[in-house]
Image 1 (spheres, rainbow, N blue to C red):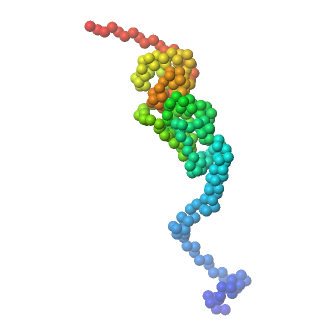
Image 2 (cartoon, one colour):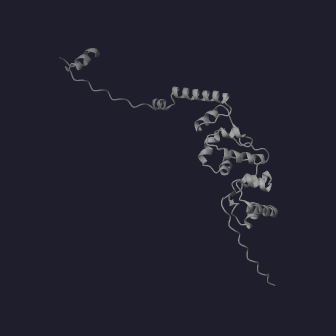
Image 3 (cartoon, helix red, strand yellow):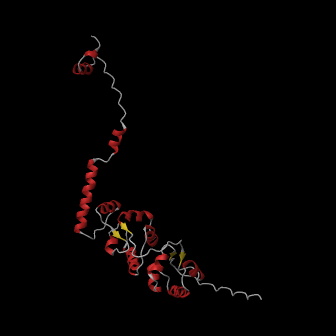
Length: 238
């Protein structure tokens, strides 16, 4: 029999299947083009549809339960896509408790400072105040709005432990008046300060002064050692 290149495809397939002629080699596969590759990498319509359904389901849940707590960072993004925002300097306890990982203790601190007129200027302030991981604050950020009500203070460099520092450290770096330094030491001798809100309440500090302390002070807990008396100054030479 002559070479089978003239056979129609059906006859060729029958002869190959019965072993009467060898199988033709498979043609080499062409490499996918950039357009085809990007088409495969693009989000599938089904995935986009699923995201839309999840977002609409969350919208329904929020409408039925305004105090619904968001479960994770994905739901935070979905809530942000729905237009929901949290005004950090005016938020209520219910607003804060919607955020995943936000604890009642943290909310209590935030509200006590807010009631004292203290405002936060950005995510870094919030992280320093709560003492949490940056990743947690990042997961909240799509919902957070830092609207400043009034003139924002200039930022200052950190850090002084107000429960353990020496008396002479208070006036210089923190720019506290002498009377407030004395009052701070008196209050500290009764009990260490718990946090910035406790400091504000016990010393009756104005909000703008407390705002300038965010990120610049800390509050170590535990017994405070006695402060050694300073040696007397030598008499001035004549």
